[in-house]
Amino acid sequence: MTRTYLNFLARALNAYGTIAESVFSEKNKKWTTQDGLFHAITLQNRVQDLVALQNRGDDMLDENDQDALGKAFVAAMPAHNMTHPRLFRTYRAREHSSVNCKIWEAARATTAAVTFFERIAIGQEEFIDAGIKCNNPAIRLLSEAQTVFGGDRRLNCLVSIGTGHPGAIGLPKPSTFQKILPTDIISVIKKIATDCEGIAHELSERFENTAGSYFRFNVTYGAGSISLEEWRRMGEVEAHTRAYLRETVVSASINAVVSLLCKPGDNRVTLTDACEYNFYFSARHSSMVLGIMSLVMSTVRKHGPDATGILALPAVAMLQRQ
Figure 1 (cartoon, rainbow, N blue to C red):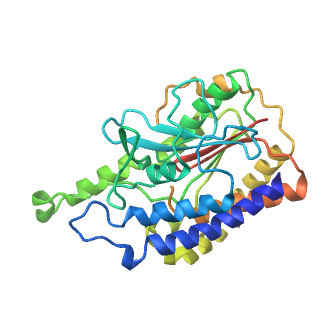
Figure 2: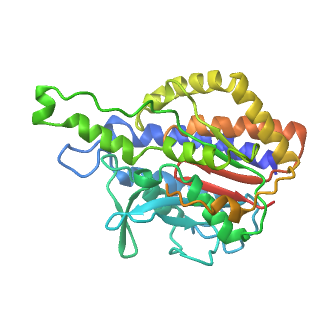
Figure 3: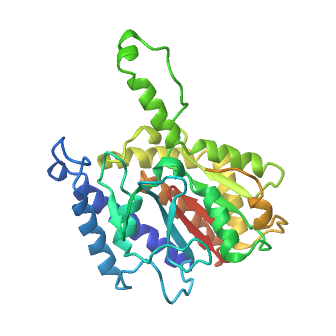
């Protein structure tokens, strides 16, 4: 299974580079008066091509549900009611099931970042990306795991991978210009709406007394300032990620995750325990996220064949049966 994951990560990195080069190119830009900065049809076509190459069907829901690579969902936000995100799953759910859309539709919905791509209609509903309110799906993932596996299932570990720390959110004293056109306030509101670190901090507090249950990896410097469309700067993302992974604390945490994935610990925390708190909560820079995943899985390959646990990425989540 570990070899399968590593092959998947390598293919994903390569596919991301190819798709990004096409989607975020100058020739794919729209006129400024149009909805979205880039033509979404290009992204749709590239995802459809990628899905066709896998020769595994084009439906999001895997009817065989053999858990070969675990269960996964992507999140999107209903454009007309953002109370709760919508989850598009590869498996059947007992509660709050979603329409079995096509993989390309789920991909378009979860990447329909406001100002970058126009929203997409799936069935009778319109969706935008889940970066608003659900940019960190870790708590949503815990709730989903409880629904899928049952509240008595013990939690081996929760691994959350961010897309780069964005820095502190603050509001400077307004200048005369800002009093007339408050762009700083608009920027702060946007950062608050898409913030991931608040949820990460809440989860750290939640698991404070259960060491080894929750791990958060997020490149501290540099990567968070690189925008979604700046795919040519992926070399910078890689450099910042490699530097981050060499930090002593980060390296020790990765080793701890590997140990748990190879040999589950004696964790007495159940999914009900993990979900009992009343907290409510990109995918940018995929090369950084996948790079961290690749390192973890490479180390697992060296130490043992079994992978167990829960993994959360920006607006994407995977459940792995213990």
